[in-house]
Amino acid sequence: MIDKKIRHVLGLSGGKDSSALAIFMRDKVPQMEYFFTDTGAELPETYEYLDKLEAYLGKPITRINATRTFDHLLKNQYNNFLPSPNTRWCTRELKIKPFEEFAGDDIVVSYVGIRADEDREGYVSTKPNIKAVFPFKEAGLVYADIMRILNDSGLGIPAYYEWRSRSGCYFCFFQRKSEWVGLKERHPDLFEAAKHYEKFDAETDTRYTWSQGESLDELEARSEEIKRNVNQKSQSLPVKSWQVTLASIAEEETDESCLICSL
Ligand code: SF4
Image 1 (cartoon, rainbow, N blue to C red):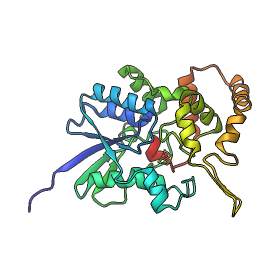
Image 2 (tube, helix red, strand yellow; image 1 turned 90 degrees about the vertical axis):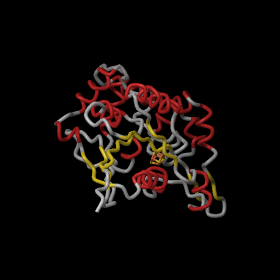
Image 3 (cartoon, protein in one colour; image 1 turned 135 degrees about the horizontal axis):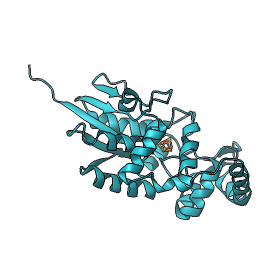
Image 4 (cartoon, protein in one colour; image 1 turned 60 degrees about the vertical axis):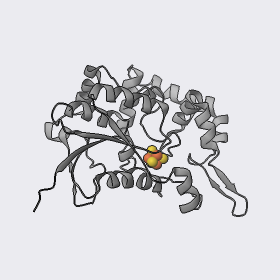
């Protein structure tokens, strides 16, 4: 019997933890394959950061695209139902399936950037040929260590942390209302593009909106109010740099759902 080669893979989301893990592992597993599952709707800042990370790693980051785009799936497979926290078909179709196809039937060790101070598992494939390992947990590395790894590398954290707490699609329904305002201000074209997905069905009087309880047009009309609320809240917090504030906001998130998109 011929022994199957073991592949070592590390998935990058464009988020801080998986990026720090890539830096941490760079000289430890020389045969590591780095990959990024591209939904086709990622933020420009994510692509820029991945280019810098690729230069730092000195190795290519394989970009994996789903065989079918978000628009194709929305129209042809999901009957124009936008994904939501309860029906999260986008993660399965655009992130998980492409990763499992990339792994194929090979024996794969998948490196996952969950930290020692996190009580969550992240996405672990159920395919028997894929084994997940957690180097940060094994080394006892916590949030402050991850920030130090990123700063020491000179890469820092991605620029979207100026206005958003995590990576993922520009239209991600996990965004806070203030992050939608950030998208409108930083990428007005993407904000407008996101609006085009929303729908009002007059027959059933049903609305399909990205943000809970209001359309993006309505949210846009409340932009100043949303910003005022955020400013009031931030005045009550200890003074920190924007990077630290937003990165720590992401830490408060507990939804396991988006972990594969934003780890
Ligand atoms: S980032 Fe958000 S919208 Fe994009 S695949 Fe993940 S959960 Fe879905």
